[in-house]
Image 1 (spheres, helix red, strand yellow):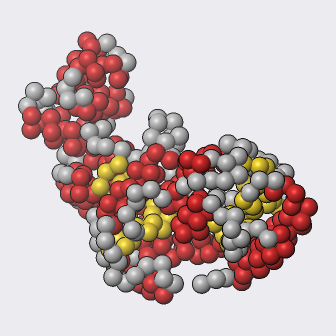
Image 2: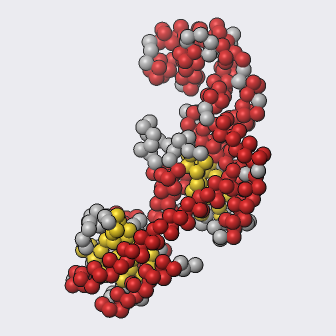
Image 3: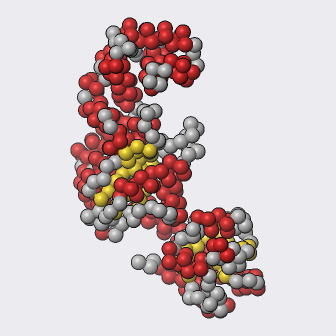
Length: 408
């Protein structure tokens, strides 16, 4: 559907192109094509490719951005680059009170002779692109609200699914996978990374990623008829790389659900959230973990949610008694995470190996378990991980979602 603000932009562009007898294109601030006039024989291979794909390839975007167009308030000329199929062109940044809204492009040498007439058009386009930006932002807000409603469950979930189908964003027969970033990831940043990855394209499978938020956590619903799990894995990896600067420890942990139907979305969200928790808290797992790859931890995490008194042995509580709680529990967990390697564990704890041996003896005394016994070590290790789960914000999040579904 062509929206009214796009019609107005198209009319302005067509009028300018007819006046100067050159093809004109307008991109948004992210480099995605908004509208393009008819061609006057000045098009190059890049323009044709962009018209077909509606987006600028990442290497080309890097090349044109190297000429400072994103920060410039005046037109810039971009030299030809035959390796990209790019002729010389003139870029006119479109701004509103300093805020970048997009770019107008002319192809060909000496396009600066059109600066005055193009400048008049740029002023008019600024108002139209500002309107477009507001409308796009509002549409995105409504779309995210629908995805969030779908993931919450209950009657609201069914209504959200119907609206998503009605708006053509999802097909009723689509498969779905939920991606959940680790706790306290900015949903806006998650959405921006997904939008950027989608715009750049690449080898992602034919599926769509719809970002949303659950509490303070950024999530995305990946939907399509085929290749959905592969597509979700691609977006999840893009998300991990794109948000590497958050947090300070050098990476973002991401969880993915299994593939399922739209009406299973709330349960898929649970899987993705727990998978993200496992990725963050279990060193032996990768930074991006699917629910299927959580292995034995998946069922244990579900058990911890439903029957915590069974999932966490009472001996674990003894490590939480007295003043040495953090020391003994953490010592045991780091030691077990290091597969019993005392050199690695003492280094991570920044203590002498003799101190490590003393603390491990205290762990054995308090729990009654023998750390040389494989089954005792496994029980202790799993118990500590489950206690970490129960002490996190995950149970409250999932209980809240269950309560919301029950009250719908």
